[in-house]
Amino acid sequence: MSESVLLETRKICKVYRTGQTDVHALREVTLTVAEGSLTLLTGPSGSGKTTLLSLLGALDRPSSGQVLFRGSVLSSFSDVALARLRRRMGFVFQGFSLIAGLPVWENITYPLVPQGMPRRERYALAQQLLSQMGMADKLDRSPIELSGGEKQRVAVARAFAGQPEVIFADEPISNLDAANRQAVLSLLEEYHRSGHTLILSTHDPGIVSLPCTVYELEKGEVKAVTIPDKKLFD
Amino acid sequence: MGKFLQVSETGLTAILLHPLRSLVTIAAVLAVLVPYLVGVGISKGIQDEAEVSVAFGADLYVSGSQFGQKTPVAVRVKTDLEAIEGVTEVIPRIVGSMTIGRNRENIVVLGLPREKFPDTVSCLSGRLPKSAALNELVVGTELASRLNLQVGSILPPFYRNVRGERLSKVVGVFQANAPLWQARLVLTTLETAAVLFDQPEQVSDFLVYCRPGYQERVRSKILQSISVNKKGQDGLRTQVVGREELKALLPAGLLQREGIFNLHFVIAFCVAILAILVTSGFGLRERRREIGILKATGWQTDEILLRSFAEGFLLSLAGAALAIILAFAWLQWFNGFWIASVFLKGVDPVPAFRVPFHLAPAPAFLAFLLSLVVVLTGSLFSSWRTAIVAPMEAMR
Image (tube, rainbow over all chains, first blue to last red; front, side, top):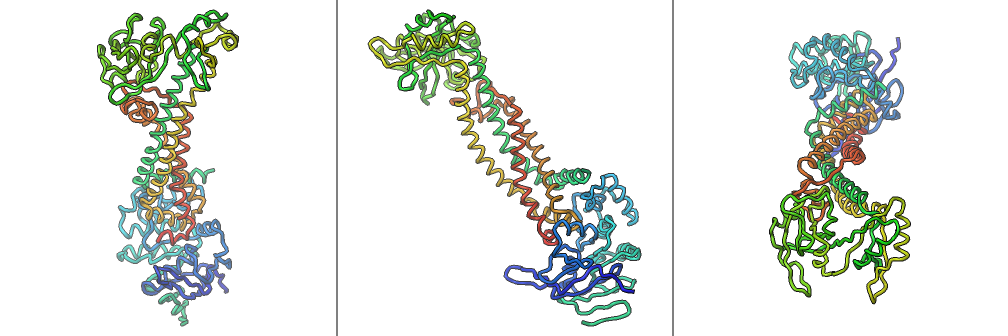
């Protein structure tokens, strides 16, 4: 059975300029992500996982090379087209990226505002999502009143809110205690089991129990690729 | 429409999300708009008052003219004017300015026949000058307070002429329906005014009242047949100014001051925009991050700008509404403190009389537009700059 390719990168590089120094975050990374697959980006800190994830999710532009979504090159997308594409994606950021002044329910459903979803419906949706996360009582709280694990679950709920085709989660369980790690992972695995594409970046490739493709990064390059039942070395 | 409203509503949320920034922005708007509204309010108030004065004034003002300048005319012309058909009353008047006191205060002396003193002038203390008594003056409350004059005060010799030095006595302190009179006006009899200015048998002009419908006919007749030349002298022309002409001339003087005020305002306006650009730096990092999050979660640049516009619109509305309330309070309860002295020559920063004002809807609407420009210039640009970069860059 041939799998359709959802995302693809072709020799992408990302260079950050800090003062007079160029930092090569990614060097000619080529990979593919199949529709409905589970993909892990692993590697030590500074290996380029977050950068690669943000390029795949159209949150940043590569310095060179191409990122393709269903065969279309993202660099050819207009600003509006990119924004609409992002609505079909969900992101769980490493630092949660919640807006401190907004209540939890609004943080979860803020991405739906431009789609014109009425406030009452957004509130109901947030209620439903938070119930799934076991946080129904935290609906009107401010994110600053939540623990790290709770914030991460809110971030996951926000990623789920738009019923995305793919979720990108950047170190979703780092800095969480065992109970919260399990809770967050279960939510993400459940999402993947329902046929959706999930791309995780993590230090620990053993965090998921499901079959997955693992891209091992080091100093901005793919050092190894493991596909289910097989390990391929670059 | 639903989407538009939903996004616009988040503008309100954005105001509450950054309370310090919102407060500083409103403060900058108030700093510009309140003095502006107070200034325009006073200017309009003065204009209204002047228009009322003209409307209830004479039909024609007759004086001499030489080299295009207004000159005094002989008091004997009064008889010629009274003889013209359609004229009901002729009042000679002397209006002149002089300086008095150690600080050389500029005053306006108005001399009228005693029986023609305006009904609207009443003495708070003392009495009005008697027709027979020379050198009796009444002064307005503002001038009295500024020069520390009371009933019975003897003014130092502020004129010298061939008849020597004369002292004048303050016999009353008046207040008038036209409060501005109280600022600089000294009211006296025609005889005293003629002595003060050393112009015997001369008046500044005549106030000519006509029967209804006769104004133009009387004007023509005056220009044709009345000579204001003194004996053995020619070259003076007769000048006649009608009520409507005077009305048209009035705003020019006021608007000149308003123009100066507007110039100052433009400078303040530019400073305010700069101030708001600086204040938009308050919490800029947090704001950039917030816009980055919105972009990352599917907001388009135009939606982010709409949110910023709604935020700016609401801040402007709040700023303008507050500015109007504060301007009203400034005029009503603080009597145009300081700004009145910008518009009215010789008025103290704390006016001792009721400063006229009129807060018209047009300047209030203009205030809103100006605050919108100030706020949007400061905020929309920074939002746009953040919204066009890649979300990760904004969030970094």
